[in-house]
Image (cartoon, rainbow, N blue to C red):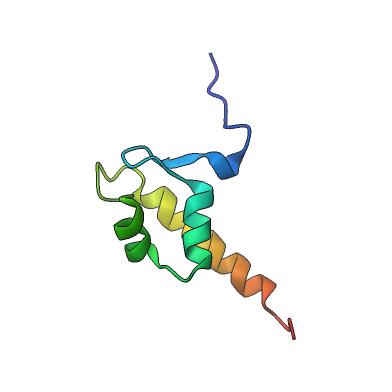
Length: 74
């Protein structure tokens, strides 16, 4: 049986220990939180550590999107 991806990636749980979802991480990032603040706020990254690389990579993607989307926006 093949593993299926969530129908809505924004609802994907990125940290199973804390139940933190992708859209929550994005929202906190957009509020100016870094990985350490997100960890303290949600409890993500403070359990088994299995989500560390996924969340770090996702935050890198968000930083790149922000940098790409802010060029000459005025």
